[in-house]
Image (cartoon, rainbow, N blue to C red; front, side, top):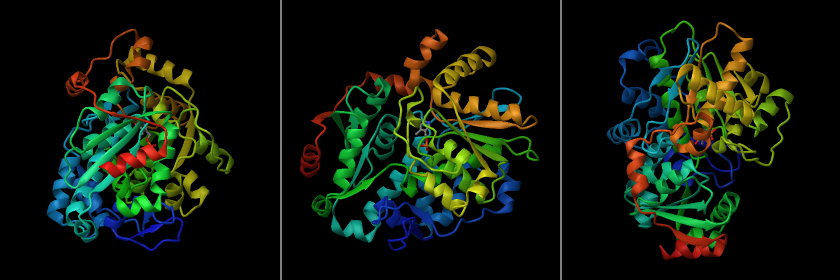
Length: 438
Ligand SMILES: *Cc1c(COP(=O)(O)O)cnc(C)c1O
């Protein structure tokens, strides 16, 4: 498989180069030259396949010969070695729980896959191996990405990880997830905002001199190695779906639109999904676009579903490419909904009281959107993607339900560990100095 840049000004590359570069030199996102079809046999007999076998069939054409088959098998099995159950909430609404991985958010799947691919390339790809340089993964986080990347890359040979996070602005669980691992994971506690962290990262990527000394790459969802494996769990949904003659409407809480873009790709590859709903909070650039046909990026506003506080979603351009840049085709399979914080809170409380199911704020946005869709489209059955465990947002949830959220054992152990971070000010030179010292 070859990947081209959506800005069309850079040469095509294979999976290895696309993963190592993250973004094309012309600043475009990489996109596969064709969308491979899965076998009919997989769709019809999916219940008889293991999760590893499904993942392997889906991802193999995207990898081509960049990774040998036995290595890819190992990478895939380490990526999906936790449960992804489909749980019934009502007769018409189900939850696909993506939060049973080590850091309790769906980002574990993409981060685990990408880290292992990059680890393989660091020791086997000619360009990296012979230079004997370590690859440095640099990432800014407002919360969930940092933990998933730290955990995914922990102890991966040949790769150092530097995570910038805004001091005092991530939840205590999130902070422990990225500051307690040690080894090749370095946490930089920035005296500033998330936007400043992101600007520092961008400035360092644009620094030609520094990039001659250090092999830098990014681990956010623009990287194909994080985006593509997110298709796996849409197939796991189908594996667990009982009414095969009535495919599900799938509702995805969306921020940067990497997750839903992977679902649309899976659908184009032959997976039966009736319809997609992009559920957004007040940051509703895409629902607005689907209503008006005009794409206007906005400045992000803070909400209680903060992982979706994105005003200019970077993966949306990939969705347009799947539909050959035609909004009419897109609208046949996707609609967007805007859900307020008040609606989100009301849903969280009512679903807990009536169905004894505790949503996290992101899942509650999706649930509300699906209810609104089903009010107009009775006789449909839908699934929400539950993207994070509610305990990650206990500070929002506990006052709403007047109860404590039980802490899973993995997190309880992590909270007890000592935080280790390096404090720096929101200054690009300080970041450069830190990187050169490594
Ligand atoms: C990152 C994240 C999202 C948004 O996913 P995108 O792929 O950026 O659309 C939704 N929910 C949670 C909990 C997240 O961490």
